Structures are given as C-alpha cells and as structure tokens.
Image 1: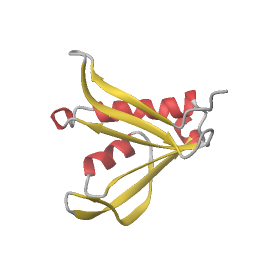
Image 2: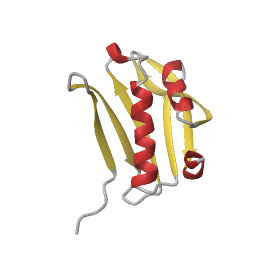
Image 3: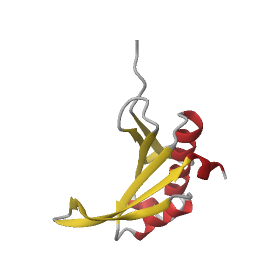
Amino acid sequence: MRSPAVSFLFAIVLRSEQRLIGIASLRRSEAGAPDAEIGYELDGRYWRQGLATEAARELLRFGFAELGLHRITADCIAENEASAQVLERIGMRREGRLRETKYFKGRWWDSLVYSILAHEWLS
C-alpha cells in the first residue's frame, strides 16, 4: 500500500523556450494533513514578470482543488517586498512577523507569515 505524498515539487518552465527557470513546492507536515506550506524560487533574470505570481496561484489551485486542503501557508524574508507582494496578490493574508528566523548571507532575518483558507480562495 502506497502512502499519500507529503511533498510536491514542480518545475517552473519558460514556455517559449522550454527552459527551466525555477521551482515551486507544496509540502504537508505529514501524509494526509489538511494544511500545507508553499514556496517558490525563480531565476533572478525572470523576476517582476508575473511568473512567481502565476506559479504561486497554481500551487493554491493544486492544494485546494486537487488535494482538498483546508489551509495553505507561506513565509518570506521580511525585507523581500516582492515576495510579500506575490503572496498578497494571490489572496494570502499576513498573519505576523517572526523575529530572526532565517539565517543566510551571513546574518539573521525576520520572516513574514502568510496564510489562506479554502473558503477564502473560493470567494
């Protein structure tokens, strides 16, 4: 018997060139969990073209319509205004700011936490 998947990893492909330009993911904490976290990374040459928004919207559709999730969350570094805008653009609500939760590039960064519920996505 095969257990339900916990993580889903998708390629973000530039259609016109069939080129891999990023990844998008949806991850449950455990198989069958009613909630999941989404994330995405995009080659910097393709920022600010609406591609991250398109990928993030598709993650919500997949999570709610295909997996029947109740809640989807995401977080981003607080200083990454573009990523925060993507999350807000797809209908996610900011729940709060967590202090110094991410360490990279030699320092600690605050993160912003976002979520959306299935009934909010449908409306």
